[in-house]
Amino acid sequence: MREPTGLRARLGRPGSRSVVVLATLAAIVAGCFGAAGMSLLGWQFAPPLAGVVRAQGIDREVFPGLTVRGCEDGSQDVFSPEDYGLSCAHVPPFVLNPDGEGTRYGFMEYRVDPSAATRDNVAFTTAVRDRLVDAGWRIGSDIRVHDGIDDLDTSVLDGTSAPFPGNDVETNVREATFWATRDGLVLEFFNATGTDSPYGAADPDVTARFTVARSAPWWLWAMTATGALLGVAAGWLLTGWISRRTEGDGASTFIAALPAWLCAIPLTVAALPLNEQVGRPWSEGVFVGLHAKLAPWPDLGFDYVNPVAGLAVAAFLPALLVAALTRRTPAGDRLWGDDSAEAR
Image 1: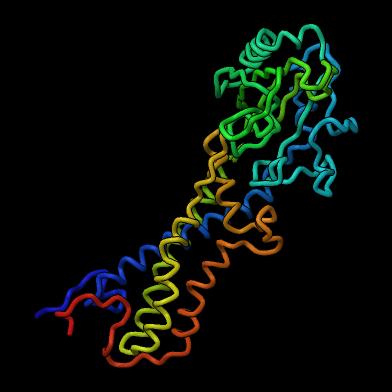
Image 2: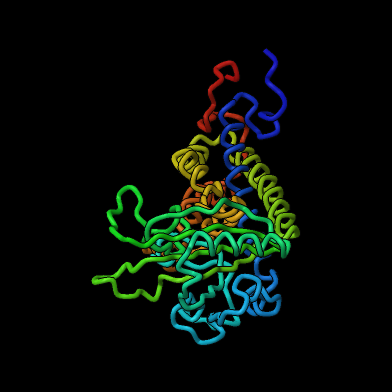
């Protein structure tokens, strides 16, 4: 009977359907890592965030006539890159969430002192939104009102300090929030009212504030897509090379294929950029997810290595070593998922 041709033949296993599956999974994984690598490289050339708010007058658009404090003013009440050993002039592209779990875009925070106007939080927030629309901002979400104060954690809607299922925070604070975009920036506005302290004492966090973060420029999307395509091609071609090198050598095929098959499904799922940034633009989830494929995970104890990258090394390094050290022999045993008895 005539042997199959096409993809299986090009991969060196004309009698095996499984090799096509494995090559496809390897291409997906390599594509994700290629996209992650190019994404991280591209972010190093993104325009700096420091100084943008004051230079563009965004603070005056949000809070006209009010004294606005930020990291540049030495305020201790706002998020500061100094918390990460950096200066206000160097905002990293990605930072840990305030609770230390998960990652989000790097950002700058600005706030004003509470006043009679800000205490009417919904009316004040509506006025801010309308001013931003007049200034050319595109509103990305309706005004939401929630209990508690959003602590800027993007892993859950409205932050971990606000009550949500499983979090029994009791508070009389109500906060209104929305986000908007303009010219490569994402602005998220918050305005809280209430005490949130015993005996009705004032809480310095109960005030109006906003954050500004960069969004991915168009050329970063192009770089990321290029990295993904190069990764897909490399993953497919390397799998084909390994398959052809180990064809006919049962022991080498087994050693090369076993770790790859054991890690195939969990690695493929882990490599996909599926990190949702709740209540934020969907594109942030893509790039935060890509960042998570190569950056350390200190919140889970991986201070210097990335567990997803480590799993990829465990899956494919044995195959690469075996293929490099194995001499190609005439077709014999095909333990690399050879599921076609007719090939024999």
